[in-house]
Image 1: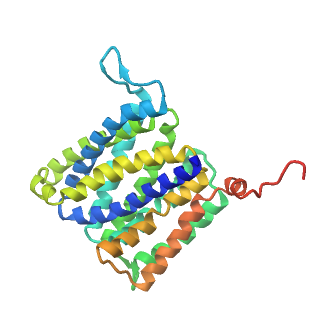
Image 2 (image 1 turned 30 degrees about the vertical axis):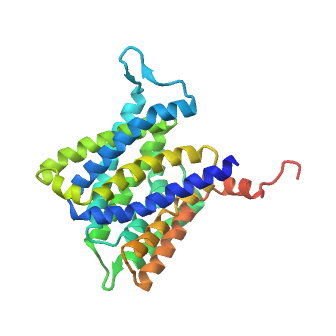
Image 3 (image 1 turned 90 degrees about the horizontal axis):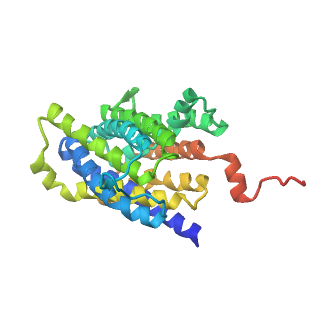
Length: 310
C-alpha cells in the first residue's frame, strides 16, 4: 500500500512540474527576474509553513530553537541552501528568458537534458558514470539536433538559453546530492528558495529596473501555481514519495515531466511541433531514460538478480 501511495505522489509531482512549463510560458510576458522573485517568494512562504508540519509528520525531533525562539537550521543546511539557491536562481533565469522565444513543450524536453549532463559533470567529482549514462550522451545529441537545429545548422537563441539552463540545473542536482544526505529536505529547500528570492529581486532592480508589480498581478494565477504548486507542493510530494520507492522507479517516473510538459502545452497553449521536433523529443526521452537506469537496481526490481546458490 505504501509503495502504491508513494508512486501516486511521485506521479502527481511529475504532472505538476510538467504543467509548470505552461505557467512559465504564460508568465513570460513579464521580465524573467520578476518571475523568479515572485515564484521564489511564494515558495519560501509555503515551505516555511511546511517545516513544522513535516517535523510532526516525520517525527525528526526538530522544531523551535528554545534559545532563539525560532526554527532551527544547521550550518550545513544554510551553506547547502545558499549554494543551491544561487545556482537555481541562475538556471531559472536562463529558462525563463528562453521560454519567451520557444515553445513550452520543447523547453520541457531541452530542460530534461540535465539528467544526461549530471553523470558527465559527476566524473569531475570522482564518480564513474555507468555504461548506459555514457551511451545516453550521443543519443541526447542526436535528439537535440532533431529538436532544435534548424535546416542550415542554425539554432534559435531561445533554445540555446534553455540548453544552458539544463547544464546549470545539472550543477544544481549535484549540489543538492552533496548536501541533502545531512540536511532536512524541506529546510534545505526553504533556504534555497529564499536565497533565490533575494538574488532574483536584486537582479530585477539592477537589470530590469525594478519589480514589475502591475505585470505580476496580471499573471498572478501563473505565479501562484509556480510558487506554491510547482516549487512547494510538488517538492514536498517528491520528498515523501521517494522514501518508499525504488530509486530507479522514482527517477523514471520523474523523467515523465518532459512528456507532461508537451501534452500540457498542446492542450492548453495550442502548441504544435513539426514531425522532426516530435522525433527529437522521442530520442531525447530515450536518452533521459538511459541516463537514469541503474542496471543493478533494475535487476532487483524485476527479480532478475542472480542468487548466491546458483
